[in-house]
Length: 313
Image (cartoon, rainbow, N blue to C red):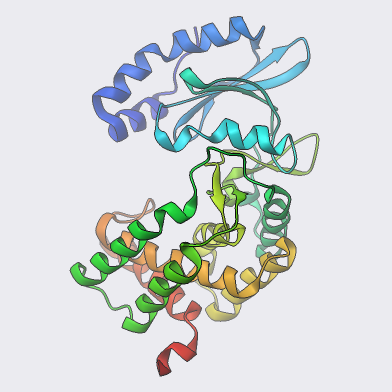
């Protein structure tokens, strides 16, 4: 039986408590069962992401990875997205067991787009991947427009309850984005979490996406995820506005997306991040001077991305 990495076990229990511990107890058995049913043998060190265990395997058709994720609603539609893409811009899906949240997938390398320092290259690759993933959404996927009411309610509640320095016009612009772009969206398959750590080097193509949420909506929505993921690269930038606008411009061109929609969704994500940091902290810092520094960065991103025309309305 495989050995579950200690870090993965600890984070699962911290996140999901007793239910997570029970799932971990049965995880080695689920892995062994899937290996047997799909004719695979372990072929390397057991890896993991935030919610999924990754076992490199070898089978008659070559190499692959077995991924078993924790049974969370956010993981339900990952195989549906892979199936719809059929290897277009994402790793291939070879087999699935939805009851156990298990998949047999094309093996990617461990090197991710996050390791690239050049923001132009990162934005270009992410944009091209986003363009390739923009296919008609299959039926049954959650629609992003269904979250619009919850997004607006949360923005208004955070604005009223939190001690923050975001300009009122900036929060109002994020609310307007939800009202104008959030409630009516294209029926297009959206990755939903397209940050550079979810874009890996592979043998079949230079880069392919992994770990999709599988949603239907506006492909421009994913631009905000990219911006948040690259925000730390701007901490010591000489010209923060120029760097932020450049990142989004390069992404927009590569994704063949609408510039205004990309910027509006990015601003919406930045407002969410500024509020979320005040409530829960950030992954990098939960308190202290670093939290203050990151919160200040989030606030500056909001201001940069809010059009000056909002000052006059």
